[in-house]
Image 1 (cartoon, rainbow, N blue to C red):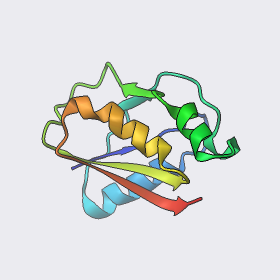
Image 2 (cartoon, helix red, strand yellow):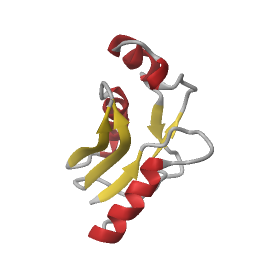
Image 3 (cartoon, helix red, strand yellow):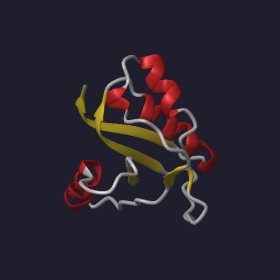
Image 4 (cartoon, helix red, strand yellow):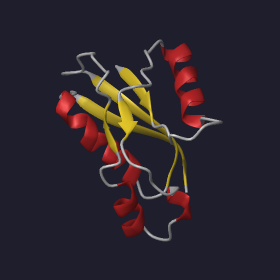
Length: 113
């Protein structure tokens, strides 16, 4: 099982990264921070009014990092995000990860907005 936290691409405090590090320590599950990268600038999801705007905003915003070389076929992946309102970010990350052919992708969210 591998963990990839969802990065906002912003500099500064990364709640998801801290959560992933704690889970790694407690459960001895490796964290990989570079599976996905943002391929387009998006507005912060919290600033958008409804689920349609959030889905459109984040659509195709992630891609597999071209420098990522691990084989994740038939592996389980846990995506960690600090907050989820509509699930649009987790959904887009899941779509981007599918070409790696993981066995299962699990979304772990600490708070729901």
